[in-house]
Each structure stands twice: as structure tokens, then as C-alpha cells.
Image 1 (spheres, rainbow, N blue to C red):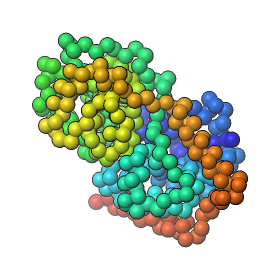
Image 2: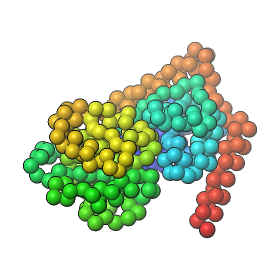
Image 3: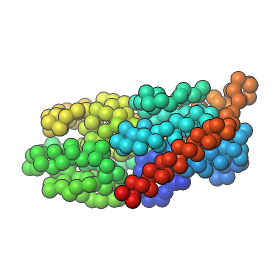
Image 4: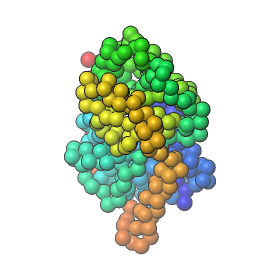
Length: 338
């Protein structure tokens, strides 16, 4: 079986979906089953709304090959806007996706609440990191007699990524006891939190391994790659109880809902550090890849025994998806102009 990931992957530091799909592609290549030419593959994996129009065209060109949809979002919850993108995602999923992979149970539940129709084949598969980079090799030992090193990462400067919480910490943490580093983009400058800007994956891993506790305050994040990478580097984590983060963190950290809870929860993490460290969840790109392959095989078995036929791009679905895309594109231009 040969698999193609039909997605415009970016080199260097980028968003979580891009980073995971790069790791997935690398693992498929190691297994000798990745196919660069989508028209020579046995199954296509595509992602959310990215290159949606190209995906529609490809489905029309190769209608007999099953298309597997990795669903992101819901975008309107993650960004606090762009409901039209969710409509586009739902329309494409209904029109051409032979199987749907959700990043978390939260992602699945919220998508259905917002109007996504169920698919015959559905599953939940968490993201996983590039384990050659994000691992515990060289992780510094925790020393509670020294300053506790906190760290956060965000590629987006959207306020939904938790910047009000980071601002609270910047003003209220005991800086004689803690130090904190922020990697990525931010809509504000901090007085006490050290800002490192954009780093590549290896440099992020280096910073994570030199830290003690990871903090994420992202609201409605379906499956945070930053959190997964931190947990994989051996960091107990403090996370906003929102989105898929509670599913990911399990017994490897603490959750909070309000700003004033954060400092108390940090104290709990510090006092019981070894307990959280010993209960960190494991994320394996090998296991995630195998789950993708098992899911694709299930669909292909349905094709083989005649219990399922691949979806074809009907005229109504094609027109609907094109119409929604044009509406989104016009809205995007108007937002830039005004």
C-alpha cells in the first residue's frame, strides 16, 4: 500500500498541523510506503481546509482512490472567528472524504455540534512528534532548590492562545522563585518573561529540555503539538482545561480554568514533581502512523468486499464547496482592505 499526503508542507518552524504531517511523512518514508505522486498512490491523506480546491480537483481526477480527511479545529473556536471555514471543512468532508480522522475527542464532539455530518468511517488519532528531536535525551534534572524554569510556546499571536494568562503570570509570579521563557509570536511584550521569538524544532527541543514545567493557556485547542512536544521532552505541564488538552495531559500535569488558579497549581506541580514526571503520557509517531494505516486498511477492506464505494465529487457538493470557498476568499480580502 502506497500513501500520499496531499498537503503544502512548509520547511522550518510552522504550525502544529504542518509539523505533525512532516513527521508522519518521514515515518511513512522510513516504512517505504510513501508515494510522492498522488496519482500513483493507493490512498490520499489531506488536511482540513488547506489547499481545499486542489483536493477537490484531485478527487475528480482520481475518483477511485480513497481520500482520508484529517480534521482540524473547529476553526471558529480556535480562532474565535472564521465560521465560514468550518462550513468549508464540513462540506468537503461530506462531499469527498471516505474516512475522517479527528485530532481529539473534543475536536470530534465540537465538529458535530457545529453541524458536521457523520461519516461511515471515523476515528480519533492524536498527533505525535518527531521523536528524533522531541525526546528526553539530555533533559536537565529538576532541582527545587534553584529557580523553577517555566516555558511556553505559541506560533500564533491570537489572544485565544492564552496571552491574558501569560500576562497575568508576568505581573504576578514570584520571580525570585521562578523564571519563564516564551517561544514564538506574541501580541504583547513581557516585563519578566524572556522572549526568544521564532525557533526551529531542534532549538525548541533544546529549550524544553533545559526547562522544568511547560505551560499552555490556549483556548479550544484541538490537539496542541506544542503540548505534545513538551510532554515528550519530559516536562510535567500546566494547561488550561479547554479543547483537547485535558485528553493529552492525562496524569502528567495539572489543569486550570482561571488566572488566579495558576500559581497554586504551579505550587502543586513543584511539590509533587516526581509523581507527575513518572506519569507523563507517551506519544509515538510509529504508533500514530500505524493507526493511520490501520484506519486506511479498514476502508480498503470495505471497498474490497463491496460494503463501501468511494465517494465521487457530485456536482452539488462541488458547487457548494466552491461557493463557500469564494465567500471566504472575498471576506478575507474585505478584512484586509478595511
